[in-house]
Picture (cartoon, rainbow, N blue to C red):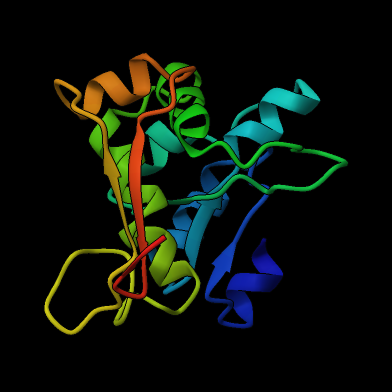
Length: 154
């Protein structure tokens, strides 16, 4: 991770074994820490210290690390549930990590990641749910009703 920060990497991931030294380096850099909770779950390894990073003022991005070797799931509600349950994130923190912060980690924050005038309309509409907290709580349910990509209903 130190090499990524020293070379002005936009983001760094696989932060399962980091210390306060790395958190302090991230705090004075422009590098975005990207956490991978489904990878930690699948490999049964430590989770990145996300709660600690957020409590120290860092924004985090979150991704599935979707691949057959360490995280064979692209299920984002499940990812958010792992983050809330095992990393002690609040649902709104997990939601921000996979949307706006994830877009910035991909250098797409100016055009993606939030609903704003001038941004690309990639939107998932859910079936009626009582709150964002419910999406994380009922992670085994399919909450998606409609998907809009580039402003077009899929």
